[in-house]
Image (tube, rainbow, N blue to C red):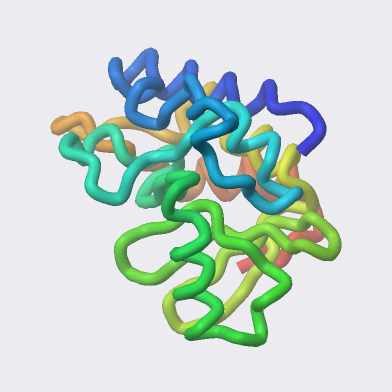
Length: 177
């Protein structure tokens, strides 16, 4: 991701609707001496945000995309280790978003594409680059495809998200489902 502005915009949009989100995701990143070094494909991401701790007190502030949190930088190595112990064939992928049921968004260390791994082990490409991924997320927030339920939790309009995703990521198999 050469331009982290889309991620910054995502955090700002999420914080408008959920005050406290920017603080929860650590938009003021942990100082470099105290932060583990992430893989090269994620350095720009973790320069913008530290991630959301798995034990966040207010679950309404957890998700950056519906159902998924940005894995906290201090948890990234352990989450990757656990993921790779289950799916050793995915050693070339690094998880960066996680839910609580064993699904992940992952970035390829070979070509930078972003894929979704479901709990059954199916891996589908969702974006050709990290930059394209965050731009798609930004569009989903800006166009109202990501919305909030009556309790303040992040939700989504499945059809609207699918139209945005397919338009912005032609040829990516996730959007062809």
